[in-house]
Length: 446
Image 1 (cartoon, rainbow, N blue to C red):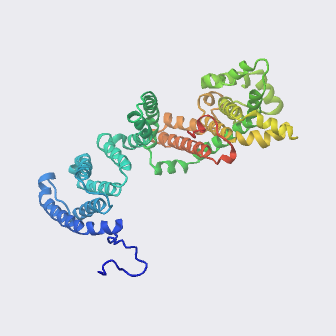
Image 2 (spheres, rainbow, N blue to C red):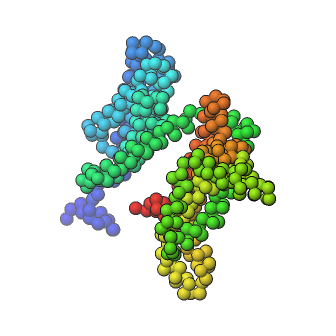
């Protein structure tokens, strides 16, 4: 009997083909292809060195040409060595993407040859993002803004990136699930948000870090900043100690006049800030009976003084913390408190150990909103307590009496603090669930 089926002990009787993993197959295919691509690109860049003067009426330096060659070689390597099949559609897609980069940056290149460095950087990023086509969109958004909106480059790029980031699920719903209404609502909202944010982002990009640092070295700017931080923190603390209990009582009890009181909480929001300043001045000013009595008897003066600043900030900022606390307390199931009471806990203990931890994130968001609304107050302070100057008052006076550049720097400082508050609110919303469920917009688990 032929011995061809005998393979020794342990043999299964099945002959297997040699196995190569994806890396070996890619290496076997990519080696010759990479060598060919390197040679073709070298010939192309040598030819480009001779034809460049006819294209741009300038000379292509060897260093820039070599950098461009390396960038193109990196793109070729990204295509050939990632293990995916090199079909005609992929070649066409990669070529079209590369051509789009050239087309978007070509006007800059023809103006100044040093702009080729931007082209080289864009090509390198293109090669690095070929495996992640979604992220290529950010590169093209930047290049489109660079070509068509150079004066608004950073605002246009940042806001279009926000639009691009959030549109994915809605585009999918539009095409796959045939939904139309929610994507349209989302798009309209993003258009409105872009219109609101565009001036802010543009204003922030008009001052450099050196300008802001120079303003911070000035004594009056540091004094105004410290005064704003101190008085707004004090106003927020007062609202926290008195407004949060009010919010809890409003949510947990019904009483005559509750609806009217609930409406009056929002009154400082609808009152124009200058009218609020006039009202407070008429009630507690030096010529008002109560204001004159407090100043004479206790030495407490509200006109052009730090207590007046705190009072105005307290007036305009209190609704934010009270309203946020009410929503937070309403989100806590009252049955948790009832169970704690049946187990022997007092009302105070149930509030501290059950209700407050579950509503903490909502309260912290209200604290952030109240603190910065107080610090950014201008209208009522201009009338009630123009001195000592807070940061918004200082920015206005710099704009009136000095150059617009100095006012820009102080204004950008205020806006950067706004961004810090927004970042803080985002962190609060992402806090661990050990602090309880968030409220309203912060409960974004869907």
